[in-house]
Each structure stands twice: as C-alpha cells, then as structure tokens.
Amino acid sequence: MFVLKFTDFGLADVRALPKNVRNSLKKELRSKVAQDPEACSEELHGPLKHYRSFHFRGYRVIYRVFPQLKAVAIVGIGTHSRDAREDIYRRLEILAGSGKIAESVLLSLRGFSSKI
Image: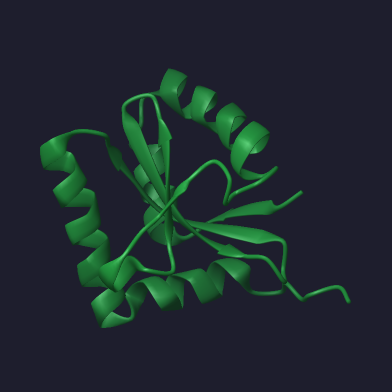
C-alpha cells in the first residue's frame, strides 16, 4: 500500500473541489491509487514525463510515484475536458520548468525513508 501525500499545489486544488466530489475522490484515491498507482493511471510525456494522470469522473489527478518510498505525491487536480486538459498540464509544466513542483514534492515527502 502506498501513502498519499499532497503537495501545496495539489492540496489547493483538492480544497477548491465541491465537498461531495472531494469526499468521493478521497475514497477513490485510497481504493485505487494507494493500492497500485501505476496500474490505474496513464504515464505522461514531455516536461511531465515522470508524472502520471489518474482519471476520476470529470477530473484528472496528476501525481508522481516513488516506489522505493511506497509514496505518491499528488501535484495537481484539474477538470477532465479538452480545454482544461491543456490548462492543468500547461500550469504544471510551467511549475515543473521553474523547479517549483520538485520543491513542493520534496517538502511533501520530507521525513520519509525507504525501509529496506
């Protein structure tokens, strides 16, 4: 089982969701992403090549998997539509290019260590 951690960006996105969507998404993340984050998602390419996209209802959840830590860092959530697809990816690509996503991921995973 993987631990789910939200970056500051991911947390802001999830807090902006309607409460009923937020609660349903929480259950879905625990039942699918926490169990097998790679099997339930699509691999992204380009500037977000180390990230994955999980689709839930009308939303995309973008995250990075850290198998050695058994952790998933959720970096963003956006609506699932043609225009919004470009928007969530564009926003995260800009953040990735500036190094802000990497910094936020590191802060969200602080204190984790691999158990060998």
